[in-house]
Amino acid sequence: MTAPHRLRDLADVQDLIVALKLTREFAEQLDKSVREEYWKLWDAAQSGVGEAQE
Image 1 (cartoon, rainbow, N blue to C red):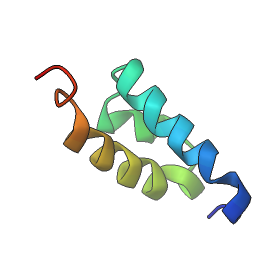
Image 2: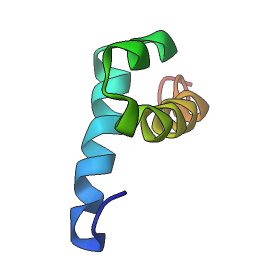
Image 3: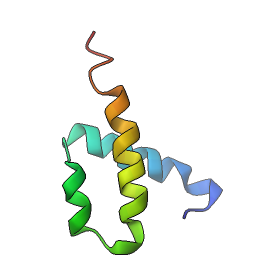
């Protein structure tokens, strides 16, 4: 989906998912071409939520 030199962009999106508490359903508002990647990033972001607070 993205060029290797743009991996930071994916990490930024994952950070935004956490910071803004975006829902999985938010993907429905995105273009179909990026929904699958959003869901992957969202799922990955959920595995780290709360770990820093423990």
